[in-house]
Amino acid sequence: MCEYYCAFAGTNGKDMARALKDCDIKPRINIEEADGISFAVSCRHCREPLCVKGCITGALGMDGTVITIDKDRCVGCYTCITLCPYGAISASGDGAVQKCELCVSTSEGIPACVRGCPNGAIVYEERA
Image (cartoon, rainbow, N blue to C red; front, side, top):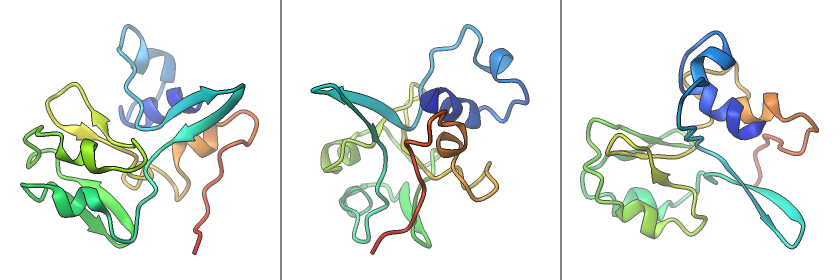
């Protein structure tokens, strides 16, 4: 469900079923499973992000503590995908890259994956 809420947040739609119907879901967060344990793979918004430093066009930048993407500047070289130590950046399907931007443009301060997680397994908190 977390992945669906994430994908839905990017549509700016009002009804999840309609917004995601017949769509190839491309969430900015991915749930992986290994040895029977599920975990979320998403951007850690590093203090000194290698992806931002390595972006050849400056499409990746910092807005306070949030790493953001300017899709108009992204040329799809995927250098950032290679540099991210967490595997949190992926191709978006439109030629640019995508990653978790904490729903800064769509949320009320809480990312959609956190709000939509049915069992509270994903939390949003700042860590030192």
